[in-house]
Amino acid sequence: MSWLKRWRRARVLRQTEIDPHLWRTIAARYPFVRALSAPELEQLRELVIVFLHEKAVHGAGGMAIRDEVRLAIAVQACMLILNLGPDYYRGWVEVIVYPDEFVAEYDYVDEDGVAHHIEQPMTGESWERGPVVISWADVQEAGSGAGYNVVMHEFAHKLDMLNGPPNGYPPLHAGMERSRWSSAFTAAYEDFCDKVDDGADIAIDEYAAESPAEFFAVMSEAFFEAPATVHAQYPEVYEQLRQFYRQDPAAREAGLESGRQTLATVP
Ligand SMILES: [Zn+2]
Image 1 (cartoon, rainbow, N blue to C red):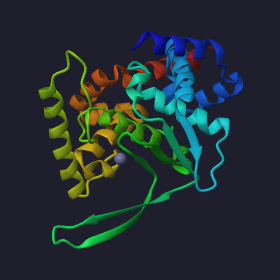
Image 2: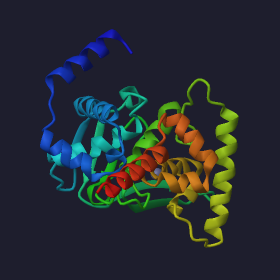
Image 3: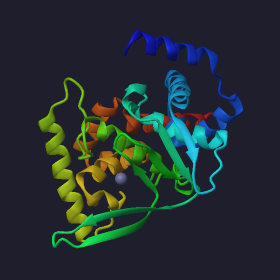
Image 4: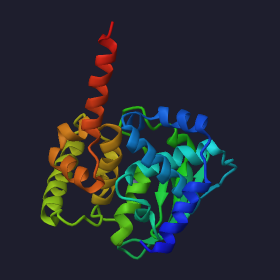
């Protein structure tokens, strides 16, 4: 990172405050934030300030952008980059928020040369080098423990797109092995698709079977929302995600639960 960028960010941190009441309200909303240590929570707060300074959050379809909306999106987006840093969201600036599902329109020509016009309802969409588009109604379903998190899903696509079109293969850190990532994700993806075909009851969003890119995005949101599930079902994928995100949400969640038990047993 250039000294100028670092200096600008330091200045933004010095000069910007988040309303403490709103911060506490939003932070308390999500189990994955409640599980953070005090230094991690402060790191998240600083990332959120930089994020909101460097990204523009715009409403569409009549959506009014209140501070609560900006903060809720920023908190969830920044959880992914807590130990990666703001430059992982480089190269684009806009987040567009619709009040509810929105319709994406696109054209394509099939194998027989027939042109199709598709209008598809969407809860979120990420454009390469372009905006992240999300439905606020779906943002509000996050934090339930069901593994569903549209903000994390779309921002995971952004990380995947750092090295080209989304393919479930984000840029790995030094020390991570491409072959390990590939074998973990390929085996898990094949197993997942088989289970979906068999109609098996899986605790992870079936949309993951759509493509390796969607599998990475869905596993990423589940990694933070329902880490124990990912850890139990696909331990090797969990390990690769732990190394990539440089976070261990299952260990954090376990710590939180044992902490709660301790508190609960205090007379
Ligand atoms: Zn997706």
